Length: 314
Image (cartoon, rainbow, N blue to C red; front, side):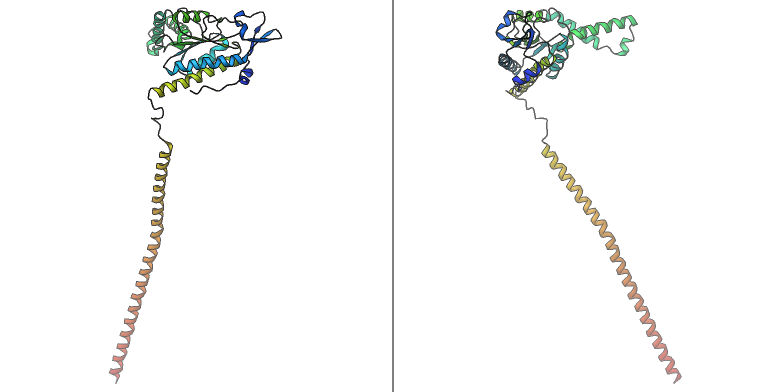
């Protein structure tokens, strides 16, 4: 198990230790408050570090057994971080509005998801068959359903665990999870309630940097748990990958063969002119020999003629 590494310095830089004003606190969070400064509660990061590690361990155990996580965070600061982190680790999320009965009345919600998929299946040729007003109503219905259910449209059943940011705003989701028996991992600020939270993480739930840090750690933990689950199932993660060394050796052999062919062809080309030159020399030598023979024959004939003339004169 390889959990993501983090330390107190990262928590400090993200502002995890900052709570709410001292007059806006929940007495149930008294054990996690270190003190106050300038009228603002300061959380004890040593406890945050320990409880965050425990929560990540539970998430890893659940995912390594094939479980699924539902990210819940509908406040404005958390919407983007929740969607990006859940998408990165192939999990589900709700970041716009929690529909009452999402967990306790899953059958009705699943029908709404089917309706969303039907609307997404419409193409331009089919929409042209409707009037302008009907098309506008279809677009509005699709946009409304996509905002509320777009993050869970691929979820076949209720999740195995909830990860919640801001328990006050997502109180209905936590109540539904406890009614069904789903464990809850939640970020608890100084004004939050610990009721219904199985794995609390004391920390700032308003700062964007802090929320992004939580989501990133949970996302990395889920990815590692999924890898462990695939490995325990006997799936070879590198089965489809070809070792690069073999490709490089083959490429080198091909390159060497090609270079040898090139060199041999070049040597042949360079030898051809030399061969032509030698052939030309032989021809020239033959021509010179033939010319010498002709000259010698002509000289011998002249000598014979001169001898004959001399004899006739005598």
